[in-house]
Length: 420
Image (tube, rainbow, N blue to C red; front, side, top):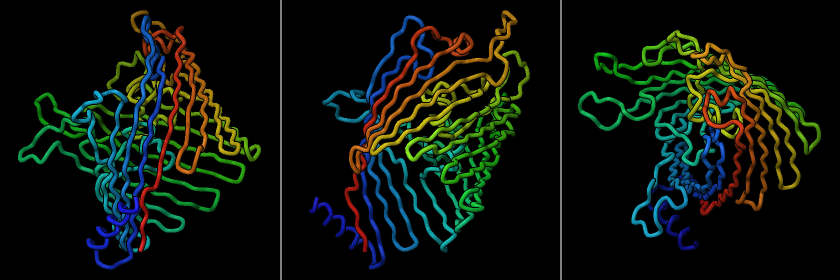
């Protein structure tokens, strides 16, 4: 390790002029065991659950030289055993998760370009999706203004499949173009407010095989109020524009309230509404809200039945929940029961039968333990008590015991730090 530090110091010293510099290098090794027995959807009749271990391995390199900041993050994601022990090459290889350079023009103004994480407020619309081993980052340019009370970020992205010389369809499962603006004002130590405007364009071919881009707008405020005892937030987002030549008209609203009862115990309750489209609605308007790039695992239950790659363009969702947290010494415990209902009518069209809006109840229990400075252990157990309506929407067997359990160890050591 001493030799490695010496080599890195020599490389930095030879590569740059004598200026104020900082270099920080850290690792993350994060394996996670999961038992999936009705995870994301009700277990199909006659099928059995499964187990696996996934892992994220990351190398983060952070460099700062006066007004220049650079970050480079390599990562590998894998499932244990997805290649044989004698494999000459890895299945997923090593990917660049972040690779950006930021220049601080003044103390308040800066610009960042390259592969980067876009994460704002509670990550409902734009987030890192850190639960997913691959997480989420964007190739983008952002400009920022930050002072003591106000923050303004705006940026954009434009994507292509390769360095083409003629117009070529964009076949990646991603947006073709993106623009956004985010403003935050911290009025005082208790009250804060943000406003997000996001414009996403997706390419498609029309009936004449002409390549077109339709833009959808997602916009709205996010409010927070916090004291030593109270932790609350509220948001409303609307969606308009077009998607593959169809009009979009959808919305999302939520309110959460938490109270610190004792130093160790906190209780909260919340409600979220995501608009949907009734099963018998014959209009072409898209009425189902899409959280787009949000960290959706953190919302609507940890079993990911809703909006984690599923339940899009559907009947929407109502989610009422309690959240109980207890922290003692190095331990953290949480219990979160959810009650789910559809936001729009669920209709069995062939029978012309309107079904109950109740989708089910999910109970999530989690724990965390700070084993050492750079090592944390987290885990949890969740169970879905689905209804016949949920069974109608997702298929599967609601009478089966649908549950999920997980255990994750996160090791995050700093292996090198240097400053001159």
